[in-house]
Amino acid sequence: MVVAAGRMKRPVLPTDSCPFCPGVGKTPLDYDVFVYQNDYPSMTLGAPAAPWSQSSETARMHRCSGDSRAEVPGDSDPASALYLKRPSFGACEVILYSPNHTASIYDLPKWHMDKLVDCWRERTRELGSIDGVNYVFIFENRGEAVGVTIHHPHGQIYAFPFVPRKVLLEIDACKEFMNEKGICLFCTMVEEELRLGGRVVAENEHFICIIPYFARFPFEAHLVSRRHLGSVMDLGDEEASAFGEILQALVRGYDHLFGFTSAYIMAFHQAPTDGADYSAYHFHVEFYPAHADSKTQKHLSGTEIGIDVFVNPSDVESNAVSLRRAIESAGT
Image (cartoon, rainbow, N blue to C red; front, side, top):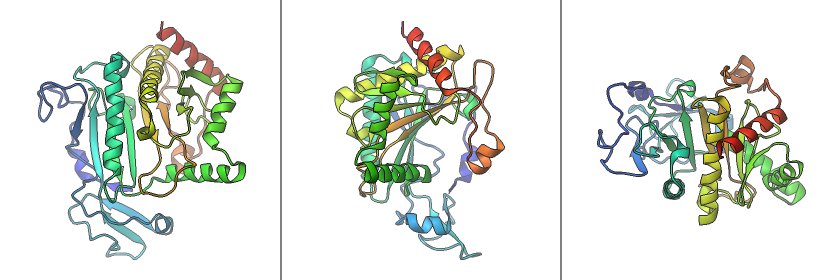
């Protein structure tokens, strides 16, 4: 958990000017892709890089605090020996996709999209090399339905001093499958989805895009690399280009399917950077649209928020047919 009370002061959907447009605030007059240091970060590299114990995290409640009163690394809360508080060491960066305030990611020409993917690779490599950074998370919030505060096309990168629990669960599942079967869980899934075909919504030489069998959201889609690799850093140049192309095709397909600029969360799932062995893990990107259809927004229910049990109110295979047709139609 990260506490960052200062983020309540950040601008929300400003109407007078956009801080990400060229020449406004800290943004240069001329850029293609620009790394903008978050003005209201949840974590900073200026805080002490405290060692983070994943094992102790399961036994005690931790809180990363951006408050300047945070105690030295490892100190417990003065009111209780149960809770631990650490300075919020890490980084929060904003990646501006384009100087065009109204552009969508699929509006970027190939050279520009390649430059964006290269930026993701470079920032993952640089942030992941910092001592104390154990996980680099690339994500995008698009649309007011998922809480975006500035409409200018952009994503974010957070560098954490710990490995998020959801990623740890995936890593454990991959290790267990590898130990039992001797092969990669995601590589096996890619082969199975290509064999069955019904849930594949797009593919190219290096990636497939599926609505997974276990989709929690209507039209949730996963981009999975065909080659076994752990991180966006591991993409070769041809793979990086193919990754950008299929990502653009998916977002274009979403907008075509719903009939408007859709809202979604994009989340990169990649291997941690703490130096441990994650050879069983497999890079993929998950998309969670905020819409069940062109008229209905998907809201999280009590079971989903309260106990992490998701109820998908739609049929995965039927959704795959609809999204596949939308991607094909939008690309012509």
